[in-house]
Image 1 (cartoon, rainbow, N blue to C red):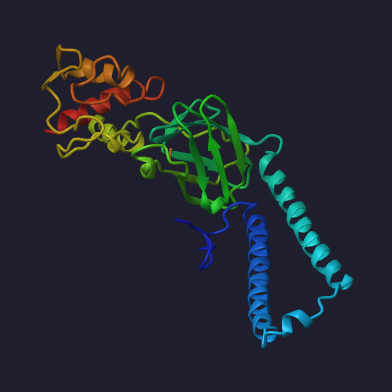
Image 2 (spheres, protein in one colour):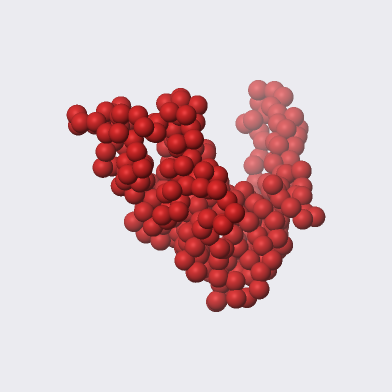
Length: 315
Ligand code: CUA
């Protein structure tokens, strides 16, 4: 997934952000502390069990267990110092990653079942791909439209819960152009494991305000619709092969007469498709739960035309 020279170690993904090395150093310190103490305690326990085992019935009554102030001091203050080091070190790394630098490039993140959408300073709304400039602090302000999600980029060593009813944020600075995987790491329902997106780090100057969106001139409507179908994560619920998902399959959908929850029926035409994208709960096909969120404000008129053309092509 990573690009550039850093391909990571046997244990760890590449250190693709400025704080990744700090996080890994602290992680390694705690790991080695644990390994060293595990070995000391295990070997010590086995040695003492063998060395001091009771060899006869009288031995226990006659043994003298004396107090040793030096040992007491070492095993009290030694661990205290080590734990204090981990605490102070941890607070410093945590504060560094919790507080975004002044003037960071800020992107609004919207999480919903089961996709990520990114809104840039120039108004561009992009699902599934977070484009950011390299070598510049990027701050994410994140909201959930439904349940608890969690935003995680392993290559950057940043992770933050996205909580309904409040905004959370995190920041990172990518070290070089490349692509990195975004995961949802909070179980959020059936397709949690498919709630994926990419970070695309590009070389950009200081006046970068976000990616250009909208249908390119030379792309046909049907192809544009196909791109949106993938980008907006429609594929998670609407299959192309006729198999029933969370929503109806697109295969043979256009022009069909569908029964609607509540008793009436509707013909799947241009207007029904547009209504279903902007106001999904208006007419739910019988037998489905109506789990779809609205895409109003995210898919423009050309996008609607593209998706209609794409659905028409799924015969
Ligand atoms: Cu969203 Cu798991």
